[in-house]
Each structure stands twice: as structure tokens, then as C-alpha cells.
Image (cartoon, rainbow, N blue to C red; front, side, top):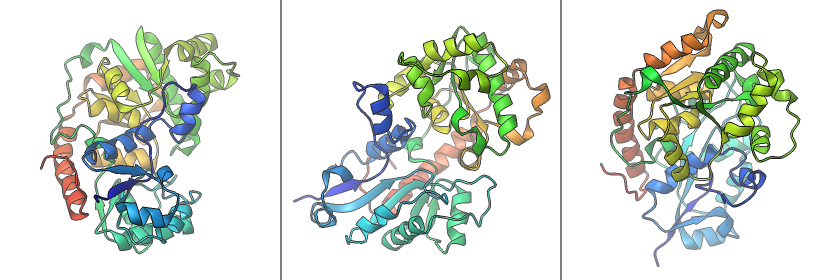
Length: 370
């Protein structure tokens, strides 16, 4: 009997027929997780796949599965406890491959603490795999500081969703943007290198969106905006308080009428292909554009976005380099018009080859062409 691959981590899709609050919970409280899960599922699709909730015990995993694959996010943070995964996996003898694990800090300290139970999981994975797939060089350094050295820097698995060795970005409409997709990190802005500057920059971005008749806001974990869009009663004072450089009624109207969210990658891709550009602070909200050949400009505000954008050569606005007192919608338009994606296109080709090598060395059967 052919054994299955156990995928345990970010989901590939959620039920779009459910109320938004329930599909939000299914996503792991962030619709961006779906791009991670879908990415892994897409290149392992030729295998028989089971998910953790289909298995009752570690013994059943041993009997039914040949390999465990963990689509990961920013697991390596002092308050994130993934010991429950180690508890389960220690009772199996299966090889374990983790794909896209990242470190999250405020100050990019290499000595950043990892929750001890999460560190136990990483040590177990290090013992049972040829290499650990990490999001960037910063995460590799954090793991090395904790005694784990068999890592390969591969970026995020969502980068390889389309299964193509190359990506070409269409920049033909950057000079006169008509359809604009924006994303914000209002709920987590205090994680930024400079929270006050980030708030001001996101205010400029909202003004930029309000100037465009065809602009939409793509929500990932902004549950309040999602609830407002769904017609629920919401205390909107937080919106006018954060976006305090625009008329409060206009702000609420924008989020109520222009918010979008997606329960699977195909629906998200279909939408983003109708846009001229994606701009904002959400990494996956912009990456979905890039993998579909649509320009994206990312506002780098924390260690996680900086690590991945640097690795992938994604065009950025770095928070530390912004003269916020003189940063206007016109400044943003100038940056959009001058975006170059050659570095990203070249970086992608190199990372793609590295990623295929990572899957091969960890003995994972995949459908990515060499």
C-alpha cells in the first residue's frame, strides 16, 4: 500500500460558504496562511496527502504515512509554543520536513529567544531531515545561535505556487495606475521598527487609495474590517483613530464597501490579475501579486517582511529610510512609477533552483520541473 504524506500546518483553503468569522478561524486567523498551505499542497499534489485532523494517534501516522511536511510561518518567537507538535512527532519514527519557518523579532537580535518547547520541535526536525527550509538568512542565523546548522534558505513556499522556473512582471501600467489593491497591518503596527512612522505611512497609503476610484483593501487578519464589510455592527472608532489624516466617515465607508478577502488561492489570483499594482505592509498580500506577474510594492516595517523581501529582491519602501514629514501621495506615485522588478525576477530563478534542490535532498516527491 502506498503511504501518504502528512501535511501539518497552514491550510490550503477554507470554506467560503461559512460566515466570515468562521472561515477566518479556519484560516488560522490570517487568510495569508492559505497561500503558504496552498503553496506546499500545489507542489506535493501528485502524492496521496492526509492532514493532521484525519489522524487520531502517532501510531496511526506511522502506519499510514511515509513523511511529515510542515508548512510553516513565523514559528520562532518567544511566545509561540509549538511543543504540541514535538510531543506528537516524538512518538513517530517518520522523517519531518519543515518548509518556510521564520523568526519574528522587533530588533533583529540574533540572540532572540525561542520558546523552549518550540526549540525542541526544531531540534527534532533537524535530526529527522537533511535540511530545514527557512525564510531567510536572519532565521538561519537565529537557528545557528541555538545550535541548529543544517538549514537551507528557501524563502516562503507560497513563492513557488505556480510551479514555473521563471516569473515576469508586467510593468506596462505603472505610469497610470487605475486599479489599485492595498493592504495594511493596522492591527499589528506596534510590532514595527517604528510604530509611529508606520501609522503615518499607512495613512498616506490610505489617502492614495481614496484618490483612486477603483481601489480595494484586501484583508488578512483585520477581523474588524471584515466584520464591517459583512454588515455586522462594529465600533469603528479604532479606524478613525488610526487613520486620523482622512475624514472618518470616508474611512469607514471605504472599508465597508471596498474590503475583500479570499478563501483560496485561485480566487485570490483571479482578483489580483485585475489590478495594476498591489501596495502595502502585508507580505503575502503583495506576494500573490508578484507570483501572478502583477507589480507589488511592499512597505518593510518589521524583521519578517525585511528578511523575505531582501532575499527575494522585492521592491520596497523601507520604514527607516522614509522622511515621513515630506512623504505624500505624490511621493508614493513616483515610487510606483519607478519600480523595477529585474532583481526580483533574477532572484526568483535562483531561489527556484535552490528550492527544487531542497525538496530533492529531503526525498520529497514533487511536481516542480527542474
